[in-house]
Length: 67
Image (cartoon, rainbow, N blue to C red; front, side, top):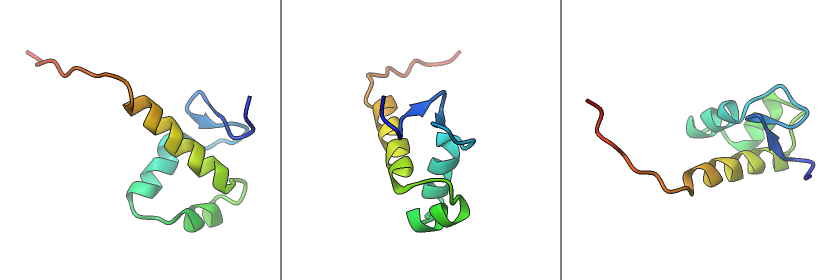
């Protein structure tokens, strides 16, 4: 398995979730700012988070009305 894999929605070996990384990115934080705040992360970790999100969204989803 890859060193930078995602497991259980957390970056492997870290106590930081994919959601946290994605929230920082969506708030227009740069990758460099995130890495400065979380020095244990590496650039490949943020890339793995984006790949994880892409794979989730790459599935086929059907929206159904809620009653």
